[in-house]
Length: 164
Image (cartoon, rainbow, N blue to C red):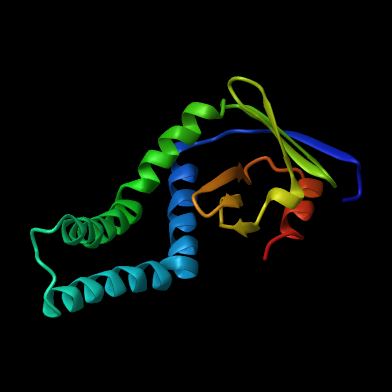
């Protein structure tokens, strides 16, 4: 980064947040989707094999496996269709609009409704860029949004240089 700290104001619009959540969902499913679907298939095949080999359907262990086999695909459907809108709602409740973001070479500081959140760059797993925002991927189930509207060139260069 050319300057030690770049601070700027951002506006978190619902439209940009929804687009970011859908982009994050696609990123997450492209990265983990085959593994999650594979786990569901393995669970189902394991249950079928156990029943074929004589497991009693009324046994507690068999019922537990049935629950896992049913919940796995339902959870995947929830994550794909419901999760984005719920996450957007949480993000918009947490982040004030307009808000303030500061970038340094070591961290990102984001104003929240309660206090500033400082996130070290080493904790950010990946930076994704969309047409309207940068997404800072923190965990497989969480991201932070930095809209591009009004983004200073120094901040854009710093974030763009971290895009994977």
